[in-house]
Length: 156
Image 1 (tube, helix red, strand yellow):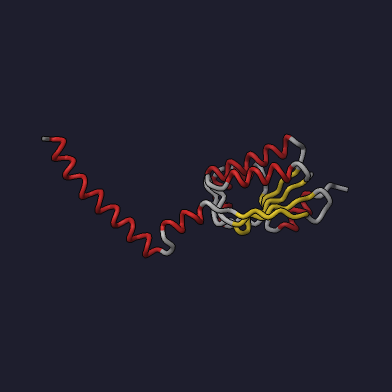
Image 2 (cartoon, rainbow, N blue to C red):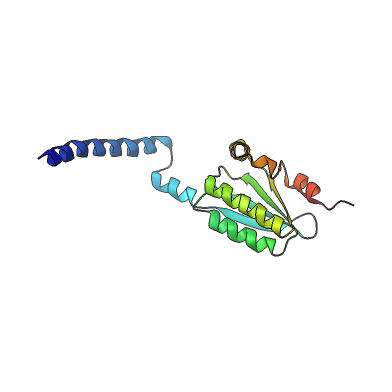
């Protein structure tokens, strides 16, 4: 009898919370389904850099647990051909901890292979995450692709 009474009391509370959650998403903008789709999509465009052996990866979309596999694959592909890789975060709205881990892994991989890696165009939100994680000691973010290219250029 005790378990039955507790079950009866909890059920209406859960239903009420679900209704409130659904309504709040409708008022805030895109539906829950479209937000979920946006969170799972990243576009990665690879191009030649300003110098021989330099490649640029331009990211569009969040770098998170849903998109890191595409990111890691693109980085591995480019590292095979490039002596310097510039990753442009200009169109990345945010990064979660999995995305940050993927960026660190790319940096470590580049160091092991004696290749150069630069990160550019990070917005305030992404820079704050990098700074809070004390990763600015490991890699220096650059404002533009051109600035990173000059910094990565071999010394004459």
